[in-house]
Picture (tube, rainbow, N blue to C red):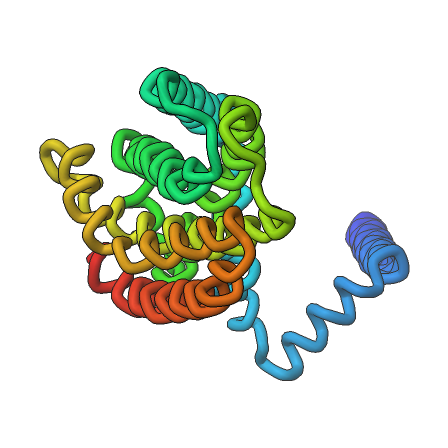
Length: 292
């Protein structure tokens, strides 16, 4: 009997010890939770609010359009500035075109007549250089399967177009900042531009925006074709002909000045701006159909 009472007493003491240990562990867990909530109040409040309101599904939503645009643009810029393949090749090509123009005009006599053709030569330089860059803009995307990955991701196709067009515009602008002053250094001995010559910046901006937007659309179409370099040139030059004509006219008016500037500069700029708006909007709307 004494042994039975002893075992019952020892069992009761063990159960009391276990219950006290359980209470101690529970208290420790509650204290740790309180400390975690005090250290990270925002996360605790956010989680509790999500549980109360049932907004946990909002965490799985796709990022905003602006976030997608910044991410895609940063990807293209970082990839290019890491290797500098496109910018360097476009810069070297622009320099070679300037040298060829210099040799072709080496026997020409200096005079004001040169200003009437200098605008066309300058835009020939821009178009040829941009074709080289546009051909290379989707080379890495198609070779590494990056374009297929972008299409599988929950991204807006129009955002892909805008990001790629912006990156092409940045690269073209970087080359123009170097090539245009170099062009006038080579040909400054032929004729000095008029006082309105600095206004050629306006047609350069309009033309570069149109070339980047329309060229991105056409380079996407020809990226997977055989002989894509030739196909892009065959599609690109006829499509941008109205824009090219307006930009050459505005550039020539700015360089010649006088009555020529007053008669055609603003009209040419208006035509170029209207063409940019219509064609870039059409490219943005149709890009989803093109990539699919």
